[in-house]
Figure (cartoon, rainbow over the protein chains, first blue to last red):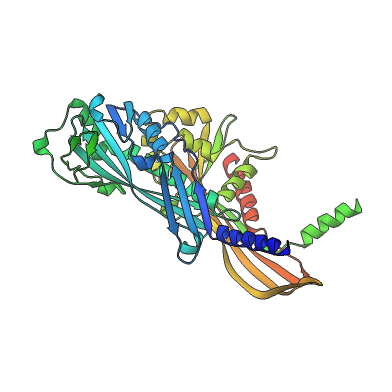
Length: 238
Length: 215
């Protein structure tokens, strides 16, 4: 009986040690306030990729904790709310939906290109920071790629209390709001999505290229990239 | 009654040393009418500012508290109501951009609904600038205790820029520079003598802001 008790205590201690070396953070569903903007007169289809339904970032901070950040459906929620506020009408497509079954002027396919974070022990400060890099691929109604645009968002929050889950969660929400603000302010200018309401692009004039939206200086004329609708969805030809 | 007096005397005695300097620089005549309000904002972290969120909350509460309190719109409510124009990346850096911002759909109406007359932008933070001494604690089967002496000095340096939305102009600045040294002597039991530097900077800033705005 004493041996069993000792074994149980050891197992409990080992569990505590393991738990002490990992942090798991689950994002709550973000809410984007209704923006003070005029809607863009375009009927849009938004194709939500698979990883937007269940995005999990796992990273071991060198010599410290392992952080598991579960963004869950928060990105899908963010972009659905955002585009609903930004455009005249939207239809949300799943990863397996065929765009040809729907009527729209433009199709937007957001994706996550990169997710990074820093904790106070790394930055030598009292702050948690999150960087999210989204790519916004914009297609016309027949599948020509009109634009491919990188949105680099950043959020920072100060450490409060023991641990850091709340501060890191706040930093992630701020990064998502930052992305939303950037998209609202620059999307029409960078991707010329408004022009797609007049009809599809001329594929002969389309050229490959990407746009970076980190700063206003980067927001120049978008270059076009040819893409096609593949059976069952969009084929990312890049 | 005697116990209460003892507790008050003890709490006054058991604090560290704090020195403070609160100043203002006025550019225009100010004043606030009934129904008008103030919003307290932190300058953007994109420009390197690190004002703590609890400092902003403290200034909001102190400015709005008491019988002479000014009506303060909560920071988050203001930012949400004007999304996305007061996000860290998009917030105006100076008063020059205000007239154009007010022309955006719904912005002027939202500001009017909240009755915001002044935006106060806070910049600065509280930092530990020096520390020293040594303190060690030990515990055994018969009990435990600490022995030694430690001290640290915090500097709170904040500046508030006040924008008047009536004329879209800068009304002036208020600055709070507070330095506090805390001590922790220990002879078996540690006795913390904490200097509440940030709290002092918050109260000083809020009182001066109230005087500046109300005149």
